[in-house]
Structures are given as C-alpha cells and as structure tokens.
Image (cartoon, rainbow, N blue to C red; front, top):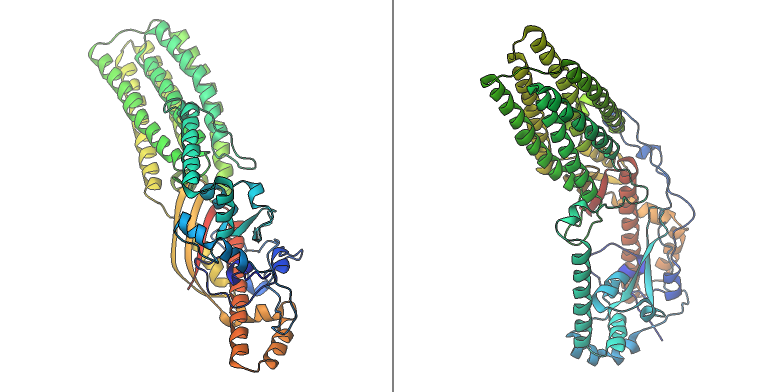
Length: 532
C-alpha cells in the first residue's frame, strides 16, 4: 500500500496550484510535522530603520517552522499508497460528481461545508497538518479530495441526496438567522466583544450616553420653568448629543460582528457609517433646530421667568458635561500615544471615529453651557431678549461646525484611506537581509483598528538557499545525494526534491515576515506577501 502526497501538501506550502509530485514523502513523517520548540530571531543585520515615531524595531520571538530536513533518495523509506482506493471508487465518483482528481486537497472546514460530512466520517483518513506559525496551537487539516468524496457517498448514497441535505441545512440556517436577527431589532441587539479585543471608544461613548441622559432631562425641565430660548437650544443640543451617541454605540456594536463570506474583512466600517449618520443628524436636528428657534425668538421675543432655576440647571449640566469630556479626552490621549501622535494630530488623522466625535460634541456642549449662561445673564441684566436669542443661534452654529467636521472626517475614511504607518512597514521589509526589494505596495484601512497590506517581495535566492542548507546539516546530506547521482533519472529526482524543500523554505520566510509585521504593527491584520 502506497500513498504519494503532493510536495505542496506535504510541506504545508501556501501555493495556489499543485505541481506533479515526483518525490514520495513518508506519510508518518508528514503527519508528525510540528513546530519546533526553538525560536527564530532575526540578527542585528535584519533590524529595520527607525519607524515614524523614532522607535527602533526589534523582532519578537515566536515559534516558527524550521526548514525541512533533506533526505537522500537512497534512504530506505516506508510508504503508504492510496492508488488502490483512488482507482476503486473512480467510476462512481465521476458518475456522481462529474470528475475525480487524484491529488487535489481541501481543508476540514471545506469538507464539512461542501460535502456535509461529519468529523467521525473523516477519522482514519490520511491528512496533512498545516500549523499556525504565530504561536497558536490551532492547525488546519487538509484531506485528499477523493477520500472526502468517498466519505460523502458512503453517508448520503448519491450526490443528489447530498445536495438536498445541503439545501435543507442552508434553509434552516437562513430561518434561524431571520428569527434571531430581524431587520430592526438587529441594530439594537448587543454583540459580545471577542475575548482579548479592546473596543476603542466604548468607554467614552457609554459615559457620554449616561451623562447626556441626565443633562438633557435637566435642561428640558429648566426650559419649561424659564421659557429661555438659550435653555431650549441647550435642551435640543443635549438631546441631539444623546441621539448621536446612541448611533455611535450602535455602530460600535455592529462593528464587533465576525467576518463572514459577505464581509471577509469584517464589519469595522460600520463605525464610520454610523458616525457619519451621527454627524448628519447633529447638523439637521441639533444645529437646524437651535438656529431656527433663535431666529424665532428674535422675531417674537419673550422674557425669562426664573433666572436662578436656569443658572442652577446650567451649572449642573456643566459639571456632567465636563465629566464626560474628561473621559473622552483621557481615552483619546491614550489612543494617540499608541499611534505616536499628539492629541491634535489624532483628532484630525486618527482612524478612530468614536473618541473624536464624543470629544468634539462634549466640547461644544461645555462651551454651549457657558454661552447659554452668558446669554441668559445678559438678558436678565439688560432686559433685552436679543442676547438670549443670539446665544441660541451661536450654539446652533457651533453644532453645525462640529457636524460638518465629523462628516468630512468619516467621509475620508470611507474613501479607502491609506494607513499611516504603511511607510514604516515598507522600510522594515526593505531592511531585512532576506529581501532584495519591495514592489507594488498597496494598503488600505478596513476598519478603525484593522488594515490590509499587500506587497510583492523579491527574495534573496542565495540567502534562501543558505538558510536551507545550514539547517539540520542539510549541506552534508545534499552532498551525499549528489555523489549518488548516476543517471538522468536520479538527477531529475534530486532536482525535484530540492525544488520542494526550497519552496518550503520560501513559505517559512513569508510566514516570518508576516509575523514580524503583525507583531510590530498590529493594525495590519490582513497581510498578503507575494513572491516577485
């Protein structure tokens, strides 16, 4: 019994297609591939130039795969073949599925999704394990396609019965999602944050919701007691802020949903969408209503009835607004320091849509309390209601200016903005001695805390070969194999074997560079490095 696995599958390479598999790899050795306990650390010559903030890059330790061991063609090996199994059910597979490819593989998840098999249906089948190189214990199993097809036919009997079962499962899933997530309630349904993930801006948003709820109720009661135009304007302002922060909270909750087939890069852009809706509502409801009421009071003025009540409400509102402002300021300072920016730079260029929105709205609220108090005081002292009406118009103008800034800021990020530290990543790659050049760089934000980076890497072939030959005393083994070459067939087999192992080493180098990028620049969650 013999099994000839593809070199790509056997070595866990990240290739899009499978080449003809000349060398036959021992199955037991393939199935026992595990990350070594040793760690790979780049030497001093591989350290990159200082990044944007001046910090020196230092590669972090992590359990990475080591290059495979060279095994000479003359070594006696034990093989397990699946040739008989492939030929035994070939006709039935072709009749049911239309084709039967011998060496194609698919992951366990693909087997569950496409062929509706169970885990116990795959038990006992040969597989190749591709381990995660970033320290996580998870790994992906790849099964031979015709083995999975045989398991599916054994369970369902025919391809038609299989398709009926898959359609039934999808219908049940759609009904369940429709029942749990109706269109309206889905927006308000809380989404639990994933373990270990920090939700930037959540503390400021929920603190602002709690504070503005009390402020809005107090200002509304104060307006009912005094009839002041500035007080009504402040009430409208607080209710607008409360509604806007509820919208920001909805965007935050929706952005926590996991990535799926329709959104492979996640739902991070939900925060920008809802922040823009918040800005539009501030401009229309808050600024428009305040300015309209102020103009109405200029045309039809009326006196303020209770000055102490109005001032007391404004003082209480100022205290609460100052508290929420301090929370937003401390949150923004902390996030700005993480990105090595000043608070002012973070306000204009930071990718976080929540903290700046809350900070600006609370800043206008605090200034608005001062303007309203001054307007009401001047009206009480002079007896001229024009000051009160002008205060209402001034508060509405400030709200409109903030709304326009928030709209433009989120429009920029919705327009596929380039992450700020893209240049630092490119410089770090160029400083690695394994990299000759970095070409065709493309990066884009896919959420407030997530970005995608794509580049074509020209690797140093000499260093790549040196790295493989220096591992496991491979140079001596290669020399022995060269000495045993007696014919063109032997030379062909040796060349094919060396190609397999060098491709495995190249795959390891790609994994290493991706790990270094993620360690130093965690916002780049999706990295695609192509070989130039």
